[in-house]
Image (cartoon, helix red, strand yellow):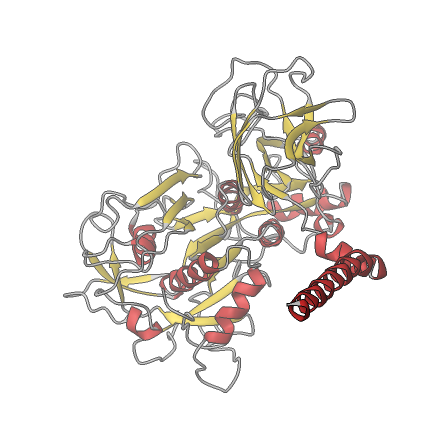
Length: 560
């Protein structure tokens, strides 16, 4: 008995000694390696990408704050502040990517004044946001409740569609104000009686300007009006972080001459033409649909629908939401076509949309029928039957999608290079957006087209059912991936469908694959998603990356 008691006492002492050693180590080790301890507790800074409104905010407004690394509500506050005022917003829900909050009625917040929206620690007041989101309290409560900010405008000039003024953004990086290279294309047809410009790829009487903020844009507009320029629109693009002016050039002056003069007079401001972009497609009528595309890339066929729910953006023509393939799909549509300009027929956008979200069971079933599609219409129909979309419409569309929190965007369009377009895709990429663009249909010997030719953009070429390249597709070092794009069946505006060929119809396959990858890894960066698509591709042509197929045929890793 005595021996048993001694044995239990020995075990107890051993257990007590082990516990004391563990406590000592837990206390001492962080002190011995403070850098490691600090790294373990450091979290990425919250980044606010949008607030669900596109203009000033008023008391009582509900904000849908979208972003990344927002954290959780415990111990954090969403505040509006300046150096003298800090007001916490009542929050109804909070997760790592979305906060729903209300702008409280407060005597300390002044109408018409600018503040910073951000996140801080509740106890210490430590500012956690790397860079807050500028917001302005509306000057008056009597302003439109839809599309905030439409009441405050710069005079757009006669016969022009005014654009809303928006909140002041962050300042662009120094490189964004570098003098652009040469003039580049733009929008609708010339006014009646005006001769066509020598360059058919630009709006003949219009230039664009980029400034760091709305205040800078307003000051610039005042100076330019004294030089004979007409301010046709002035708009802040908060998701992109700059303000955009659309300017009519003085009478008797062409766009190249205007750009030369503006760049000399205002060397720190980015100016370029309003470049025109076109859909990359050719369509053919056909018999009964033949569906080969999904099998070619290893996507589930009709027997198993991919139910992944994710947001996808589309910048294209308007789409026919009444088509059987798109009826009851989750589509949010918005037009960025200037008032009074006829929209292009919806065939192109309808076909691309159906490839992405077409209803199961229809003859144009899509890759991600459960996805939420945000469709921006930019293409208009000119008097010469040419279908075109303008640089400023694309920039505004990308900004809108960014404010909705959309991270994958399909651009089945192409045109010449443009510094405004370049800055748009760079800013979108920096904010976490994955841009997928058609590589172009100008032939194997053609120069790169844009936006596909810009480094942040995933450029997609087209192949047929036999894995042969589309004969009209562009080639070059900028090509990332190949996807089905020859005789691809999809919906058309109205009823039924048809076969389509072109890099336009290859791009949405890659967009769907990128969206699927993002759904599996919501915090992945654009470069991570891009590299994953490259690594899983099936090599075609010359071993390794080549100028015809890029990294090869799209093969989404892991399926749905």
